[in-house]
Length: 274
Image 1: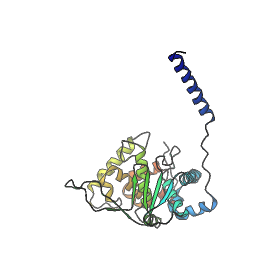
Image 2: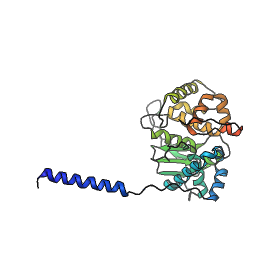
Image 3: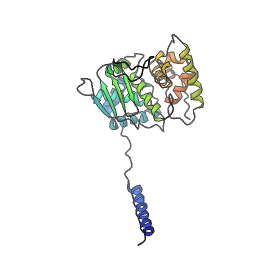
């Protein structure tokens, strides 16, 4: 048998194997609904979950369930274990960012590392003189290149109590940002026209403003941090965000499929679904 005939035979076998794999490969199981006991606790552990409209409730809970089943929770910094309610709270906040029908549940994320409190990390960025400081820096949370998220549980609890800082939604906004490689400060979108216009204008406004009334000045550090900061404001200070940054509020309401102010005021929200 010639080399050409042997190559053709191998290609035929490979093609048949691929066809059989496509025919008999297991299909992913649909996410199961949350247990009843967890549905009740979700409302208490994640107050903004009350903003999820009835037509998106099943989708939201399926995102929470998928998160819990596919992400590993790792206790760190002296924390003995990550309890069920801690896992549910983190998954519940993260899933609020995923109410778009085509959203994936943070596909690159593998682990959530939970610390009892703020933690120290080595500094890697040089200062004004080009030197990297020896002293570590205290952090409430971090997102590492899509693979892992680090969180301080004390600060998760603070967000539950209404603090303006929400480390979970901030860090998971970074996860959304990382899904679109090569672009900072924007999640994956079909059309960036409106997003770019509003976000660039508001980012420049924050950079000019010495004492912004709503947005954390830290958002002026970079477009990526701005996306994290405005996401925090949307979930923790929605009334003020809409009052001072109406276009920005409307943009995030459309993207996240939520209208916190409209629901609180009993308004009928019209969220753009494109």
